[in-house]
Length: 509
Image (cartoon, rainbow, N blue to C red; front, side, top):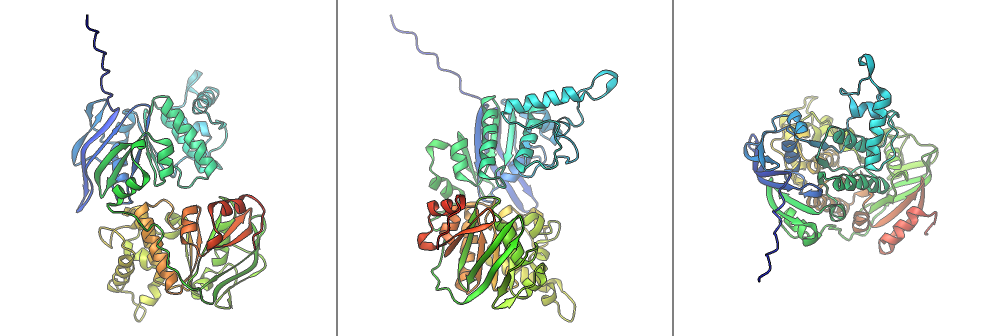
């Protein structure tokens, strides 16, 4: 008698799927036949260059944009997500990189705003609200006090509060848009613990990141977009990082760090003994013409504060800052700019750009006086200048008259660079030049930095990415708790030597 054939389990059905979804904004095709399948109990990675269509795809899932073609399936059935309310009703929640909590309300009030539990006489039952919020944080395995004010919470904790709010509404599909871009290593691990708890609880999580190590350690599947189109989808274990990069950019990325060898010239920037009590102390450094010097260290080491003090944005006490031998007064960005110093800040949206202004106006903001003729600034002169620098930086945009807010993050960063490069600086200070931008754009920014150094510009770069530091710097200065602990020439700078200097108080000559 023959054995009964083994029962074959039915194929798993995605909890949500996008089929041939397209979306255009005027002449710009943001999505072209995009596909995505997400399963319950899985973390799914989404990768692509800036401008690949990731943000538009997220907004289709969130109900912000309705697709021009294609369809969205929820549990195998077509669904219309015509508004954010529709998406929430379908159990979809988006956790953005920059949360929007009400700072004056407590954590619990932020979670249950507009739907607080009521007690007798219709009054808010705060005790019950706090109990419910505490149960959510227990479920997520994070100790956040429900009664504490939202003001003062770290970005990581704010994101976790947003996650708690989402699951309190019954969300079973969570979209996380670059959640780790502004987090420290410890905060990233804490967030990953929460994401894994959500996964184990049966949620489907879409995780968007430019960091391939995060995709490898957290995600089971990954989908790749390029130029708004679906490229491929894989189990993470079946694809290498090199192959992911090649599929994202459509070419081999053989030169991530195109550093040119340059013989440094005379000292251009000289910083001697500057301090800011409680932030940094007795910092001295030099940068020569044609040299790229990296300022490395852990988050909170004081690197950003040092470069902002050099530029005159933040205060400093004692010491001197010289450019080509000329002493710069403290707290005077105008004097720094006049001496040929340019600062590309870490937070491009808040400090580097005016988001409602056009690409043209943002790219020329620091040059309006020089571009004017007889006190009159013409649109033609502005456009020509903007076109020149955005072209050199290979910036992608619809029209120069478009608001800079419509550009992808990488192209916004290029506009910030264009704004400062138009001043033809002697010293370029760049704070986290490639944070939050894709691998292809990173290579372009690195190429341009190397070209500037080859033309004799002195470059001081703050970076938290060790491969960037080691790949681009002629010298690496390491900070720990507000003090310089190492000055490493390129030949001696390794991951081990940099990390050792960033975590221990060792001085390397």
